[in-house]
Length: 415
Ligand SMILES: Nc1ncnc2c1ncn2[C@@H]1O[C@H](COP(=O)(O)OP(=O)(O)OP(=O)(O)O)[C@@H](O)[C@H]1O
Ligand SMILES: [Mg+2]
Image (cartoon, rainbow, N blue to C red):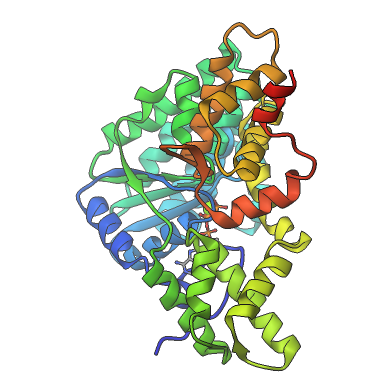
């Protein structure tokens, strides 16, 4: 029987990484064939964990460069991350130092600088000539003995920032810079085919952002790769391995009840649920977990303020991708879906008109929002309308925003 150590939040790899064997096999097959890959998946599915584990498994055959672009705002920031990431590879680092020798005084021992100081120096140098230095860095990386995979996590966040800036406005200059950056990435995939592969992923979807900017063609050298929630068997196996490790005994049907309550087995939610069950067992001084315990823990701990804090990330990511004028409408659409159980096209139009009574084309803002909500795994389109994919996220949304909410149908009657 397998044992698994819990981890609730940060990415996992090695012995904390559960399953995803099929995804790993498929991803590695594609990379071996020379593909560049765009991983698309909803929030908290385990995208970062998957690329980290892929990197581990390929470390002997490829030079794997992992970039976390969470804090990057510009092409210069991305190239800075790329440059400092070559440091663990002696052969590449020697050449990187050559590229940046103009910014390091001959009296400074570059190897004695910490990553922060190095990043500041590199970034200053890159601000004006990111393309030139970026090209030189790619040449350096292409010299690696092994083929290279550059994993760029949170890539859509940087693209969104370059495109919209701090005020979420697409200006012609920002559009031009985004186009130049994406074209540069695209040119790497064409010019260094077979030598360098790029894997893009992130916690917000890239396609809706590029669609808004009419730049979708810039990523057509990337093969889309979908990662879905775990199926019931995988989630059940994970819960069993966690339970075995911590001595929790699931009584008849309680494990299945957990899966039923979640509705969609998003790995982070599975781990979070187990963590609360285990904490509850310890508090009760009994390692037995019944169906009633599961329901009680779900309604109290999972939907509690603490649960809210962990699920706040769903709200935060929307704040990052939507402008402040349409964000309140997006939140309202989700509240309608949570409270009523579905979001119909008519209800969406009523809410949109409430927000933008003078808008002649209300459909445009709606389309942008629905695109993002579908793509990022909040809602799925069913016959009856859009519904939440995850029951947990729906319940949480309802308990956070549903209080005193007036559904769209009642508003039309009132008006
Ligand atoms: N393969 C896995 N095995 C075990 N737990 C996992 C696995 N993948 C994800 N998790 C759980 O999900 C959490 C988040 O993982 P990760 O950061 O990889 O997700 P993500 O999809 O990158 O999230 P985000 O959308 O915020 O970027 C982990 O802390 C862990 O609880
Ligand atoms: Mg991630």
